[in-house]
Length: 247
Image (spheres, one colour):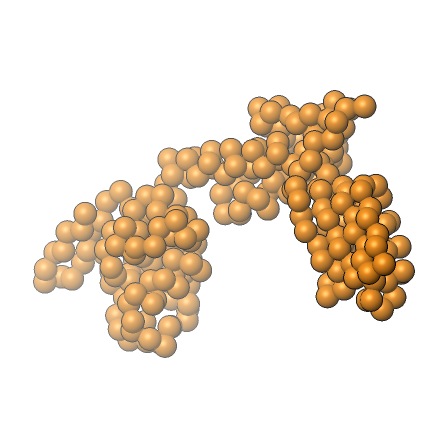
């Protein structure tokens, strides 16, 4: 809770998380409740009152120094407190306590491990690894998880490292896709040839007017497939991570 000491105009806050943004050679800060900033950035929390300890912009939260209207106007070309606070919340650097940092790190790590487990398989058994085994392999590889990057991006980086190093036998799961092509499309024969290189096997159907294939692709080829299909064919992702039957 905030305690306003008058007439000094200083505000003292406790159990606070701060978000800082440097602009026009000055540092601006807002005081937030613990663990609420990420929820706001992710759209989980939309009410500023649930995020902020106090609806105010500071020069220094710990000293209770509130930013003047002149400073705000110079840096943000505005004195609209809510608009300025939103900019700081979205663009600023989150200052976490050690306890908050560890909680956030644990959360991101768990998300990362779940994503890797869902997207990868043992290429021999065609089964997924449990998150605990993924974690053990990443620890052995000294893969560092950080709090200021999305879990999905870090998961993709972790997959690249795991596949490259093969501490455990691991490969990306295939994606199951469907492509529909109208045979009235110019140069459709060349397109079918390109598509067949990426979707090497699967169920193909061809009529006098259309060609379609349902099959598996390597996820790294997805962007190339999107480029080929752009405005020329219809692409659907049927399954993001397929576990193939063991043979």
